[in-house]
Length: 153
Image (cartoon, rainbow, N blue to C red):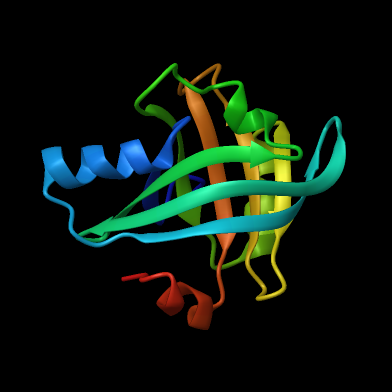
């Protein structure tokens, strides 16, 4: 089932510092992992290095991801940016059987619009489910060591 192992709600923002301030002041979040990511990605329009500022905030078993697109093929995020603040963008499910997940996405007829990975073994795709759910679905395969390093629970 595609929606199993949901662990993340993600938002895009034009200003990650402002977004972190919102989470800290309004929602009492004290801890966030904040970094700049440079990731090799594929889109239907070409490939390249996507640069994004990212923050991971864990509240219980749910991770909130904040994304500020910077450069490269980041239109998937940039096209959804609000003028200020945050805008909901996607949910993410952790896959424990990557090939089965990819096959199910294809079987469901969901277009893959973004794909990438890291040297650490993390792999991800975005499937466009906006016509039925109103947002994207991200699926990721995360090695246990990487999951632990990103604060996974």
